[in-house]
Length: 528
Image 1 (cartoon, helix red, strand yellow):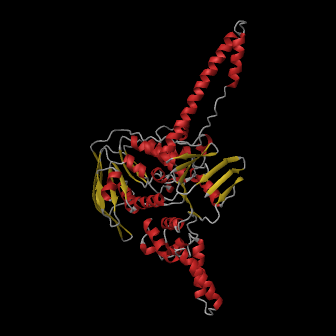
Image 2 (cartoon, rainbow, N blue to C red):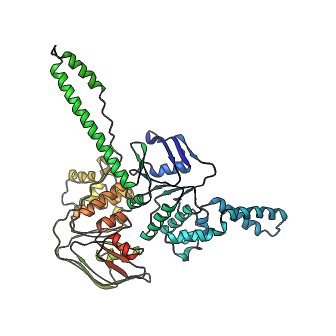
Image 3 (cartoon, rainbow, N blue to C red):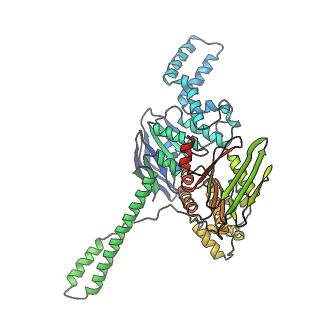
């Protein structure tokens, strides 16, 4: 069991959380949520011992093993993939290596024989002979190609390294499992596999994630980091959302009643304090007034950007027609004879493992890339706005946020642009900082700002939720649901796809595709 007592963490004058007392019990999954910078990942690091708390203690029951999803993707480059996964259980791995060293000794003696006998007994107790097959099952579940299982980690892409490190964290049935953003780079099949794994996991799980569907699926409890506190809610993310909104409303309603009572008493005191016959009543009301205290409703650290994609003119019947689009990149067939008609009212989610196909298609229809064959025809009423997955080129100029937006705005007044940026959470002097030092999440919000100013009637978004916190994802989700034009988008965010898309196109590895007019849930049901 894991327990924290009187835990506090401060950096200088800044308090992340204070006087936290929690007990984590086996069989439960605790989702840690909070605004960017609230201290979610830092809290996990305190639990795992990577960071020391300012006050308090973290207690783990003797003999229990804690496993953490590592964030250093290059730490295991000299090891092969299977070996890296087995290193998730360090005791088992150390026994394996010591056995290998003893068996490889040219002068194997009686003492070595006794030692290796002890090791073999412990190895068998720990199901060591199953280690490689167990590691392979985990790797297959998270979607790593079998061809890489015995390859060196340094030969894998960054995305595949993340998958291996996830398998490492899951390996060996740890007593306490700590996962920071475990769904990153996982396709829908791998996410479903991970959800099922965690649902069947009998021990303690503590997870940070921006994926709302994932939190709803696996979490039995929510830990909300806000108001410099960590508050425990029983239930999943949606239950927390409803509960926290209800609590906030009740506090405001209670304060409103108290404010009304205070006003009533103040009026009475003001009217009758000079009246001798009423002075005793006025005095008693004054004492009553002094006892009324308004609850301190602190402003939440959560901030929701105002994302709203308006359109400058209505779309006609013809939107986009693709005929015979094919594209090969570095000898790989990415798109093969793609025929696609996009109609007014379509909200198309492009899904599947083949990320290159999705990005390539978006680049072709926006004119950034020429197809090897085929034609692209936009309707005469169409204006489109594009959010590319890789948008760093937009932020290389040494300009501030206001000047970054100015070329995309019809209204050139600085007050207008600063007001616009304020709604996107760039308030005050933040609007004058340089774009080339912006964080990943800030760059995404600036790209949305650019798109909003164009007021296009077709929006194209390639993985728009990367780098965003739950609040920004929620705002984007609502904006896409309310959008009156056509949307073409790719995403791994289950909730976003399910709530927005009315048409699903899945790209296969061989350049082929499946096109269905359906919701995401219905598509997955048909597919599986």
